[in-house]
Image (cartoon, rainbow, N blue to C red; front, side, top):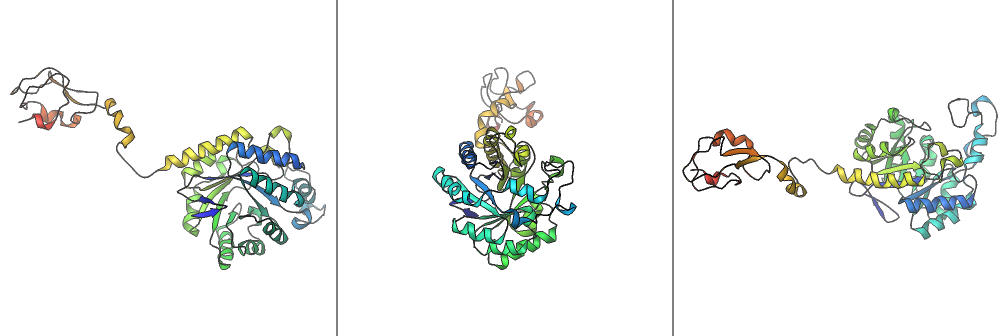
Amino acid sequence: MIEIAGRQIGPDSPPFIIAEMSGNHNQSLDRAMRIVDAAVEAGAHAIKLQTASPDGLTLDVDSPDFKILDKDSLWYGKNLYQLYQEAVTPWEWHGPIFEHCRSRGIIAFSSPFELKAVDFLESLDAPCYKIASFELVDTQLVRRAAQTGKPLIMSTGMASLSEIETAVKTARAEGNDQIILLKCTSTYPARPTNTNLLTIAHLREAFGTQVGLSDHTMGVGVPCAAVAMGATVVEKHFTLARADGGVDAAFSLEPHELKLLVEETERAWQAVGTVRYGGSKDEQASLKYRRSIYISEDVKAGEALTPENMRIVRPGFGLAPKYYDLLIGRRVNKDLAKGTAMSWEYIG
């Protein structure tokens, strides 16, 4: 079990739902605050920011290496520096957003993208840290976040098993074993067919950590499936309305969808249960819809049971149908009225 800002996270608790604001504030602090409010109303447990600067992420260069040339990308044609100028959350907004989250009773934390961002977030008393999937290979950043001693959520994205191992070992070398790995597919949006949720169990077994999902698919089906497979954390990008645009709007949930995510992932968690066969206590009333053996005509003491006076019918309070052939021809030891549930005590 891992605790973040007083909330228990683990298989014995409902999934921890993180609403990722990212750049969906569209460079408006007022909109950022309204995103917080909408996340609270939807029932999310946390809001996540991104603490980055264009200069901390990349170089202001226009060569092909620094341009987005994939025509299928939402950000085709931009260079990295331009994209990050549009996407970053101004650092001076963090304090007001964190304070607003506290006043609304929702957890606020962030993904640092450079070393000084960790120090900045420490000054805001961030309760945990998220290492973004593309930053997982930055061992300096992982080490600095781990040194805070606070829980560390790390997205795996395109990382190989050995790269994930390096990140986990880097954190543990700093004495920090409060690690949650997130299965993540680094396409935006992602398709269910390349989400590969079976990786969740493998990650859990390979590293002995909790595992969750950072999801970029549309809708809530994939996160529900992930929770059924043991995910304890679900992160989804969140916006007020996709039609408003923004760097991540196209694959972000709207408020009614986030509310559905919170409700349905908790239902999925409740449904996992344990390995069990046979009726539960709640199912006992449904026995009337099963079949069993009943007396179908009045029978006098000493009479034999026959297909005419004994049938397999609903409800299921008599002997099981598998005993029918054994009972045929046997004599009863007392008068039995039509509608009597058959029992072994009436034989002999």
